Image (cartoon, rainbow, N blue to C red; front, side, top):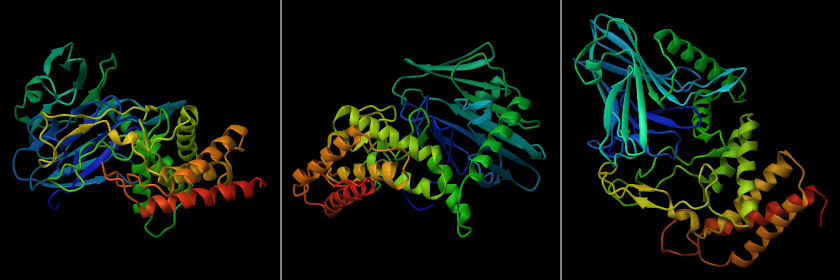
Length: 419
């Protein structure tokens, strides 16, 4: 990969996610939700961030892939005499209802020979701000840093967890998440793997896609789904914070939030491939927040937060030295005039184009308010789509989206036979 490129796969359960490098190093994992503090953040600091890594002893070729039509990641290490496989996933399946265990699973399977590896299990809960304390208790490895805690359940030995060389003669597992009374075995882990695989395969069967580029479209759809916070329907702009727009610059922002303009694009993309549930829930999430607060923000927290106070984590080195590392996003109070057009476009998609529901009096009042905002502001300067701080200018995209807003408002009126 070139300088600054991210060579990672994503796994998740629509509540949180983890990024797994092509060598099977888990370098980003926030818990218990996407926007919670990190447990593993080696992505942002190779020394202090924390990681879960398995390093083969010897020279191995490494190959990584997703199991077809799933969010299950498989990394295989091979050499002439030995081979083993790592499978990473978060359980998500149906058993009378949707079940999404909020745990990160890693299964290590010997394929041939007697492969050896070293495990690096280095959790740093709470963005690695405090020194973590770890101990074994009742067969479970507990790690605490301040108010943050993560547990590990495994059939690996305590010596292996401490980093001693391990000979892989049978299947091993690691389960990382909150403390509970659940007992795991290899058999149970494989059952959850099978159930999760079936869930994703069935989800993909609901997609309507052209044959051309079908695998790429499916992978993109699964990624969008993985970035969906199913508690509210919010879709994150990204799974990470502080990955720079250009390596070495300070344009390092927290994108683990829901942008209204991205919501409009995501609704359109998901609807075009046959999905109904995610677009409807996302639109309802945005509309509820906008109408309840009688105020439009360019972004919201995934739980519906309207204040996203921005702070810097000065103790982290940043991705390839790009600083500061930020959490929260001060852009929530920026003036970006394109947002009115995107909100009206969402109204149009929701109440006319896809006709999920019928416009009511409250929605018409809100639409009128949005159009009046466009009328009052479209000729003014704003921060623009790139959210430049302290640089209010006339941006073409903002003007264009104001026109889109008026156009969609007219179409809504025509759809309902209003003047």
